[in-house]
Length: 151
Image (cartoon, rainbow, N blue to C red; front, side):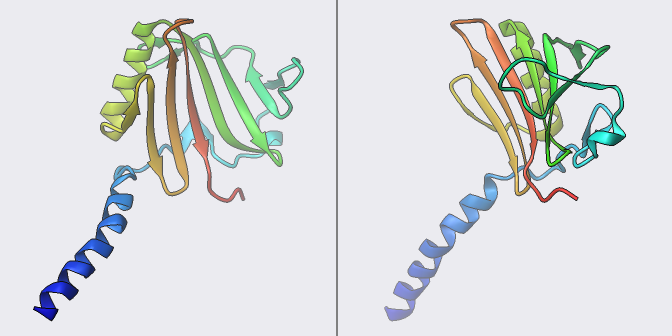
């Protein structure tokens, strides 16, 4: 009887570790966005221009950025730097159709992800992808964020 109690206790203690590990995506995360690797130095990307609006420090854009990602139409693409290293890319879009197309692209690449309402996400130990949609304003955002140490 004592052995059964110990076994049940061990199983109960192990379950959170198994479920926590299951939250991570098993396929590798993207190593870059449109050819720019995470951690690339700002000085090595000469075609980026700073966003001039207040509150967008260390945020850049490309003048001739393609406004398409897979089949989805985009409104803007922003490149975020920390200590002059690329760590995040944000994509803005309009319309439920584009949200569907981006979500489908991400599901094809990384599996089902996790969703709550109009928020969807994929997580790795050092990376995340977050897809948001605001039904009221018919707009959305997609963020690729490198959360590991920057070289």
